[in-house]
Image 1 (cartoon, helix red, strand yellow):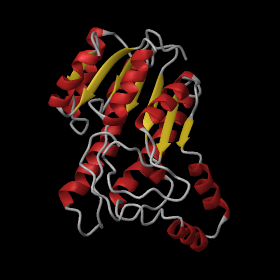
Image 2 (cartoon, helix red, strand yellow):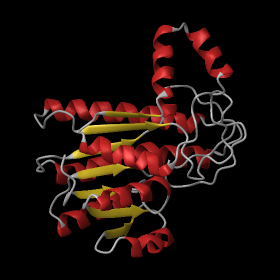
Image 3 (cartoon, helix red, strand yellow):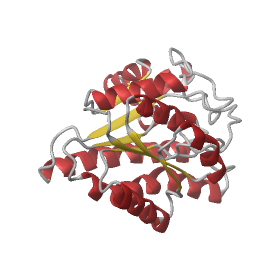
Length: 268
């Protein structure tokens, strides 16, 4: 996929992975529509992206999402790449995390992804090479104690992504229209205190952003980071469930969020 001149929208772009991806796409010569729920964060990054469209967006609000899509329609008339990146995480035992935080996790990570896709997809369908990019997580493949609602939303994002991909194929809109990104912990501050499991280092934001842009350019369907995620998926297929759960405990996956101190960031 050619990215020079491509119209790219990114949610959760004021910091972390969203900001790093914006810089990478800008380096490819893409035109950018950058959104975030934090208006202050957007003002901080505005000088880095002269010429970009920048707008505050609450992905959990249908009205806010519809208004943002209208800006793209009015300014560009269409869209080539949509990166659904906005997200939150709240660590802690299920009983200790407040109902409001569980609800917010679902509203932003899953419902927000659905709402953004629904509103922006009609702007993309006329594009010859459009791509939907969903930032899910390696936790969308496995149990993640002390972040159960977060993991649930990422399982949901994966299910939504593959379903949308098949829907587009059935509608005759082509293959490989969807890229699902499933990274392990990223060093954005969102997962501060999380303990990296065996063979799974904390990922650098710039590395993940570079890999995402490369995957979009290369028309890939799935991006798992780091390679140890492939091992976890393979073991899930071949080991009995009890043995797989035991491996996750020994490898430190099941206990990786027990010391979480991260902030309630916007880029998961």
